[in-house]
Length: 72
Image (cartoon, rainbow, N blue to C red):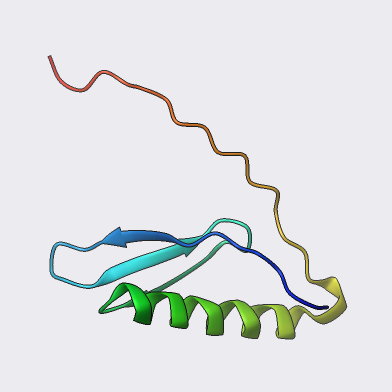
């Protein structure tokens, strides 16, 4: 299959560490540091793609930032 570029969205957690989300594969994982999160996501993505085999597909993700009014 070669290489695939995916997105890693890191979300700091109040109790420490991070959750990381990959929208193209719709998978989450976590880690104590950013580096650990990215390593864990890489491993989870590779296992996910290996399990799917020839059926492996990524979702197209279109990102836009928008402004919203918060509070009064």
